[in-house]
Length: 432
Image (tube, rainbow, N blue to C red; front, top):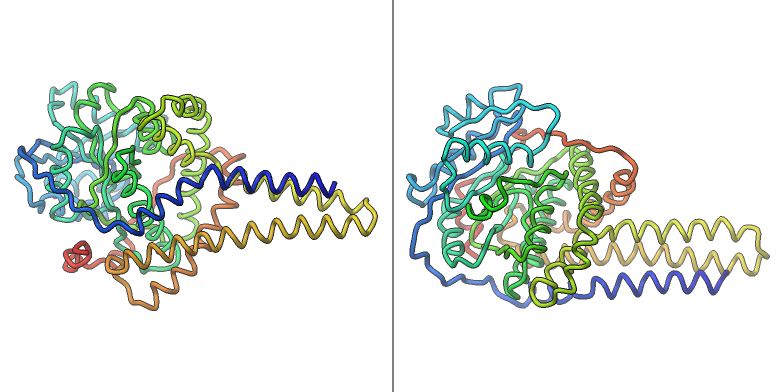
């Protein structure tokens, strides 16, 4: 039993280390490279539509529409559409008053952002309004930097990318440890995932909001056929499998409002965790096959496979097996039981410690490198650095519950904490 326990723990540790070792390269690249200056200047100002899927977002949607109307980009080349999706408040009226083109959708069976996007794309096609060169997708609580469309247009104009993602900051980073946990995670995603991917020429991944999809790809797909609980990752995976390249524009900045109540954070991340399991089920085998394509496509498939792989589940499984071994060793002689207890408790302790230290390292490097864009007092930055691993630890029960519970899309309330965001400081935030 002793040798079996040691071999099991060693095997799990070695396999997980080898599989995720490539992200150490991302970490080093994200640390050493300066902010990349994208030198291509667009020869053409392309025509875009901004798409906002909103459910009961009357508190915030007017601000987003106003920020889109204030873009440093020709207004006649940017139309704004809102899907008022199963709304029971004044979202549609507020959006119309702000100057958006509004479509009202009522469907209690097909619930979620993916269905809402697909509905609008099909309506635009039916009404012969489908000649846009690209479509921006936003969440209603976003605020968009005035140069967002202009910067995205520079990258899109290269013709290399089927989609682009952007730099995602938080408008309420300093509200509490929950919003700060989200904020650090998204800044880490920009700095240590999408930026290195862009530098290496492999696929980036979109993350819910603030992304651009080419009109050609929307027409090729016949709309938005991505309806899992995490439709953004589903889209990213589908692009990797089909060889469609997703890029990253770090100079295009959006500000996103994060949950501040743990119950809402739990519901949101439970949906994300369940969505990742759905993607594992529907696309896992295809991604494994795609790895053998080699080259950029093969690496992109491997990278996204590791992104959606249930690493947390494997860790939980290893801890669970060690707990079972601990229970079983109670029937063994004392000398054997003591050795087994020492081995199992040591493995569990090391796993938790390394998990905390690894997240602290990621959080610390992100805080250091993105110090200027985190617009809160220095003592709060340091405080939330140490609570960041605690925030991530809460994924452990979330991941476990997501395995066994049926999860449905639930709206997140926005608009309770807007005073945390100061638009007048945005130029300082992005000029680093």
